[in-house]
Image (cartoon, rainbow, N blue to C red; front, top):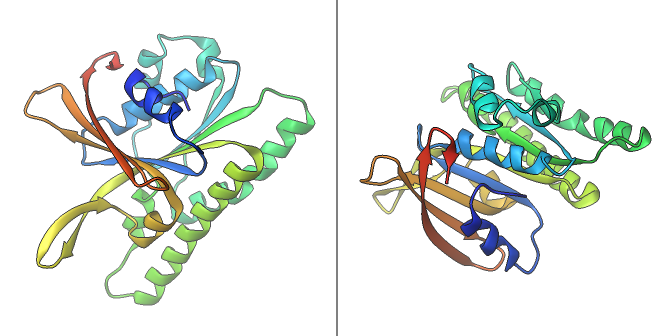
Length: 229
């Protein structure tokens, strides 16, 4: 995965085994989608393809054009999919293997990266405090989505990047910031990158957690109109 920062790419190169799901998470407006789009653009520049699954209302196509500098070659290599609800997302993930096999059969350029932005947006919209049975079913589907993505990563060597929302959990009478999706994220995500705002307007703090090796790294980047630098 080719992230839009030399700092993170240098850290990734030192990891013994880079396998599993990466997540980017943080509060609204910190630049998660910008970071994910830049990662997709960097990936497809090497004659490889990416799938970008976008679950929110307003597709950031103008931002994609701006970040890619309008390159038709780049834009043609990023397949954008927009699910309408959580069940739609569930079905899309379970049909991705057919698309991968078709590309292999036709000797098309390799599918290198799958991005879901955001993994829990549609999931949270359907949660209902008064319907625990429905919530259990939704949580089961979320686990299945993450299990399927892990399978694609392991079997086809496709990199998986998910964008996630920030949630707050009451722990020992104190609220701590965690990824939305709870235990599902804790179980399936191997690497996560938290983005937060700083006192400097265009500066963002990044905390990268390498869960298999129990290591964390911190650095800052500036967010410009051209993206992170």
